[in-house]
Image (tube, rainbow, N blue to C red; front, side, top):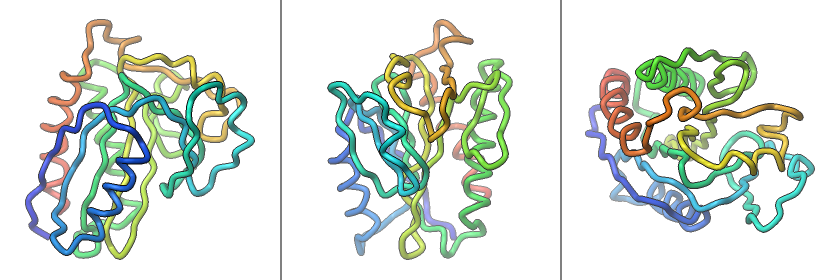
Length: 204
């Protein structure tokens, strides 16, 4: 597959509307590979494997059932969302390999800020000092992938206390700002694009 990747910066968006737009795009006859970079308004989302009991107290934050893989998580401003709307059927990569490469991408990005990170077998995502800093949730339909990853950068982490993040009671979360104090979402976005171009172009 040699289709060019198109990057789109969408700002701060409402989750349900963005989900509709993703579904529309992957079903489009004019489909092209796109990577959407954005932040979401505060929202709890439930993946296809989610148990709603893992939401302990939603307070005033909306809860939305998503069609991505995984459990419950929180999205909010200051967290970089990267959605991968790409054709994988004709590429050199399968779903498990894609997840592994996305984890590697996040690890490379964090290393740029001198943050050492790890993976946990059976729990997709990336961890720093045992705390989750990035999540992965994908869906594949008719050979096309959508949804993607979230990376905590400079956000209010308190809503994570109102859920069992990713279905794990007591799982702690962290963010890049705790290790690189002057970090900004714009900077991470720029660095992410450079790393992604190298990584994905080799795969596709």
